Length: 278
Image 1: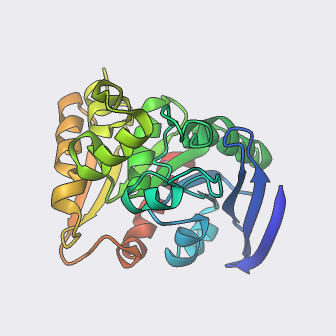
Image 2: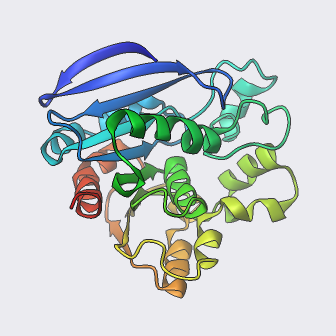
């Protein structure tokens, strides 16, 4: 681990770090906020397309309440960088290139684009060990592409997270242009492989509610991506079908950006703290 910078923040410490990832095969960056006291729980935030480990860390304003609640905050980068894959820079324009929080199976992406394995097998367990926390005190949330990642990883890995929420998630990627482009690029044309990374499909396959304490989803009504790309109503219907408690909150006038996230991030921190801290 290489400490890139460290900053005093609300009595705690905001760190930016870099390490050589065995899963990705490239250096990866992440941000970690440590509250003033030994952390009582870990909350992992997955950012969206075009973002880095700095975006939520700098823009969301989450550290003040995290310090009060005793939450450590882990903000990974969204994607591999500097792989020198042909077409990598152009791919960012339509979503392939940004990690989408899955393991690619199609070349040229399969070697490095392994964000699911990186998070679940490497980074999150490593940070948990360092902080002396376990799955029962780890929550997951995210925004947009990261909201997709939060919902799908939580459903694909039962028991690994004790609480779950999302801001404006891509809730049914098999039914939207962003998902079609990313899944075609990473997984190929066989759409039967796509369903394993669609939160709505995964929720409908549950035998019982995986998060009985409830899932929180916030969505801005002025979000320009809402109608074509996000489809929270499909995820809500899937939750209802299996009896999963879901609080889907729609907010008039709010868009897809970080002013929206900053407005409601404290609600998400409290939602997770209520389930992680006993």
